[in-house]
Each structure stands twice: as structure tokens, then as C-alpha cells.
Length: 96
Image 1 (cartoon, rainbow, N blue to C red):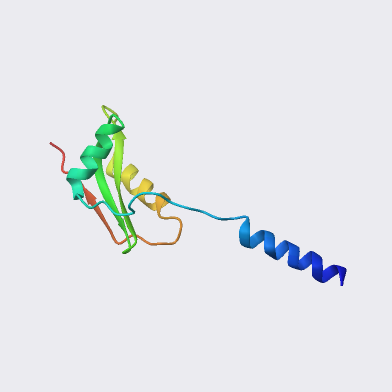
Image 2: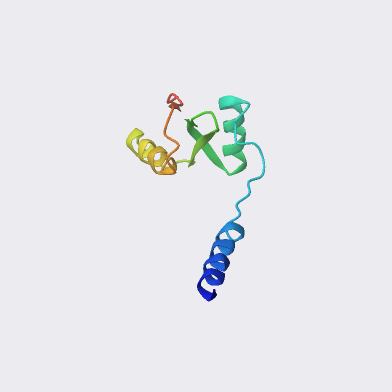
């Protein structure tokens, strides 16, 4: 009897102890223009965008004046998709 109570208690903790919530939209509805706006708010500049399935997409920003290579951007995209969602596409801003 005691074992079943302990097991049920542990299972109940797992069910209620790991709640995660997100606020805001998971999509960039304004495309690159919205990403430029977002990066600017952080005093950064847009270097690319990433699309992760149909659920979410996002902006890739970098510190202004910082040197960054396409390889570095690719590594950031791969690390950010480690959740298993998979990369659908990456948009990279052309250098001016």
C-alpha cells in the first residue's frame, strides 16, 4: 500500500511540477521588416531569419559592428533548433 502511495505522489509531482507557458506570437508576421524592428530595439542588427516547421520562426540578430561569418550563423541556427523541431529554412540578409 505504501509503495503505491509513493508512486502516485511522484507521478502527481511530475504532472504539475513542469508547467511551461509562453506569451506573445510564435510567428514573425511582418517578415524581415519586423525582424529589423525587433533587432533595433535590442540595439542589434538583423543578419537572418529561421523557420522551424509550421509552429515558429524567428530573427537572428547580432551586435552592431561585430564580425560574424555565415558559418557562425549556421551554428546558431543548429543550436537553436536542438529541440528537435528541425530547420525548414533560413533566410540570410544580403550584405550591403
